Amino acid sequence: MVGAPRHLTLEVKYLDRAREFYGSVLDLPVREDGADEVGFGAGEATLWIRTPGAVPRGGLHTHYALSISRAASDDWYERLDRRLTVEEHRFGDDRSLYCYDPDGNCVELAETVDTGDGVVGLFEVVLEVEALDTAVEFYRTLGFEVVDRGDQRRRVRLTTGAVDLELWEPQLGLADARGGVHVDWGIEAAAPRTAADRVRGTARSVEHVDGGSRLRDPDGHSLTLFEP
Image 1 (cartoon, rainbow, N blue to C red):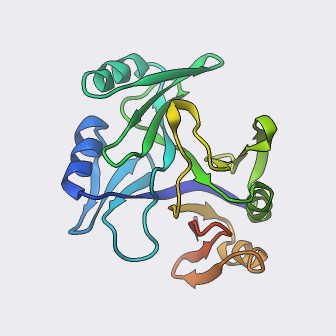
Image 2: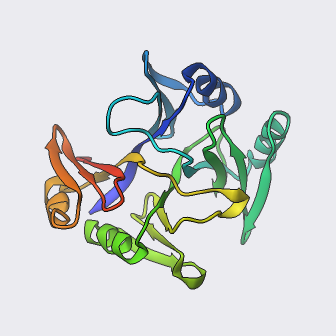
């Protein structure tokens, strides 16, 4: 069984510029600060920004969503609007605020809880895929559940119950967002080796590592399954 998100990694050109955006504009706390990467707290998950280098690389033009509270949503809009171009969309009674970081990643701040300050978690990751049906079957085999399909089946939304995953054929979404390429992310899994072995025949690679298993999906995205 797959569950909560553990990390998402973005590739950035200039670490200082990205550190300023995530630390100052989004007010994320620094958990680790190194020469080539910085880890920020996003609730229980870690958002890594990493300069180009070792594989797995961070994602490029990745659209992802962070959770904020409904009570703090207006304050977030005012904060972002002072420094960035902000686009707002509503989903039922809830709204999401979209903006871009300095490296072209589309950051969504989504209302998911009633109260709380700051970013309370990682809510969604969007991957660009070449063959939608192949990608959907891969993640279903890992334990994700399909919850929604888009118009003309060009996107599919899946969930673990703790984090949502959207698979997009190449396209522009809301706020002209794009799914990420060569994304590196991680989630918890009750039995990482068992889950990884179920997709060994369709994964580009499967590697068992300390505390879990790392795999490459059919589109080259890296997903690490961690023991809870």
